[in-house]
Length: 316
Image (cartoon, rainbow, N blue to C red; front, top):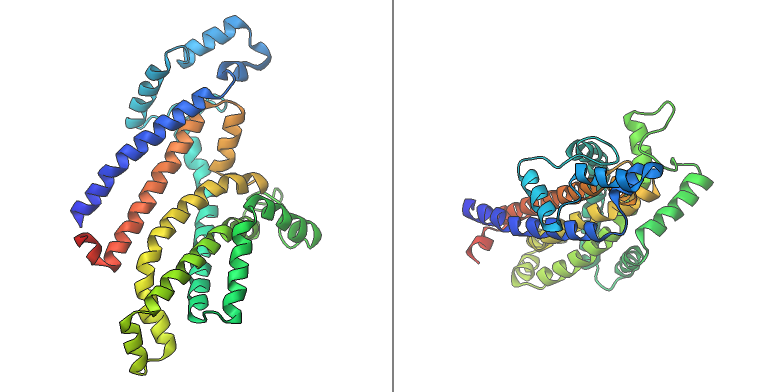
């Protein structure tokens, strides 16, 4: 098992290297000059030249990439041009909010998706199965940012059940209850698409397991149907569903960018959008690479859990 984990860690380095290269090239190809964006009305040709030299932007593209990569390996993500503070500090500060939003959305979509998938498989072709399928298709089809605006219009503006935006109230906020009220709408919005995907995949996995011989044997012996579904079938199906949860974690992290903009949530996604608009190259590169590392780590954890549930994977 230790060898498997080390192998997975080693295979993650080429992935991260490729991500860093692609992100660096794409950001470098964005039109506009960072020095001009920083200087604003003071962007004379001489000032732009001096600032580009100070920021190291006058060097060739390949040289800038390797300088940035070597600094990353030393733990130095650089300094944000627009905020004038270390990139890693800014990312970690914003990641706390993104982790709360994405973690809550992942818990919701995993729990609800598994539950709906199991019920749908257990009651195949029934009215309940058709209703769940309809809900799943609607959840997958509607874009999350559009659904977020509908939620704001109905639940926040019309009914006034929840706050419109932000993480805490500007006046008199800051408690746990205030955080939960601000979290409900963005977390539910972010989790809907992933819930549909997990529910459909769980239903397919459960239907395959329910057709196996040992399930027929358990039913023939008179084992209670609930125990057959939740103890025997789900235990086998969850091994197949677990890798999908790792993929949905990446979807939730990437989808948080849109949700944080719609709900004005102060996380990494909103930070990246602001950094792109201000041409803050260091902040964009550092933020995207940090999210990629988190995604790789989460998938490694999912793989370890999958091995613990089914050790036969090591023999494949």
